[in-house]
Amino acid sequence: MGYGGYSYEAHQAITSARAQQPAAQVFAKGDVHAKMNPKGVKLRECRDSAEHPNSVGIVFALDISGSMGAIPELLARRELPRFMKVLLDCGVTDPQILFMAFADARYDVTPLQVGQFESTAELMDKWLTMTSMFNGARGTAYTGPLQGGESYELALHFIAKHTAVDGWEKRRRKGYVFMTGDEEAYPSVPRETVSLVLGYDPQEDIPLETVMTALRERWEPFFVIPDHGRRGVEPFWQKHFGANTIVLDGPVDTCAVSALLVAFGEGVLHDLTQAEEVLRKSGTEPARVKASIQAITPWFKARAAK
Image (cartoon, rainbow, N blue to C red; front, side):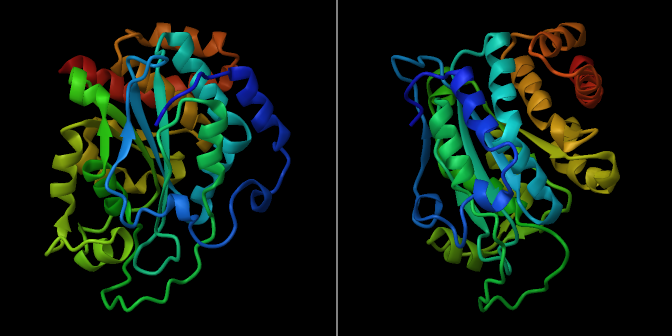
């Protein structure tokens, strides 16, 4: 996937047209859409093309439980064009975006939804808004403990084992994963969950550490906590993501921060002053520029210290 050119103006028009719509009108209703159902999916592919010869795979893995739904709503109503504008202004010419959504596979009716890698405004928007935000009770035969958490580990397992990207296969360049959340993961992906949601039997539960090891082989993963009020989960995620655990001032900064991190990773940004200037030129409000730079400063310092 990932064919076609990107138009910032077209993307702005799409998001502006729904800026005041309620979420029920923006996103799909009911159960997971058949095209986003990951059951039986072997691979989601991010491939080069004549239009995009140096594709960069970018995954937004979105927690849609409870108040975490604010981030996909912001993406769909306003912020996704900002993400693309910052990337393109920095010189990241061939981004391909895949949207995933997840909740709790132990009891939610839509535990995992997976789109395709896309390059055009229309197709990015299609997969984002095809996401169902409904999380009713699944009613499965799962008998394990319903401890607090969401199925972050299931989404990460899908990225690690069910994606193929030319950036890695041809150029040994890792893609980028931005996972949003405000809870801890479960310690492993249950075998029965893989069977139920993905459609095959791994023979045994898959530990989170095993998932992370596989993920890091081809992806640079970031865990994005939406605000300081929920940073209580930061120590847990630092154990697995290290300095790539990013705490935002607010959900509205998700796109600006993510775009800067990709631009640094691609080597087209080199310092925080340059990053600040890019955001200003993109039309980002001064308060949001300041908050975004503050959010990535701990990561930048850790990176510089290596």
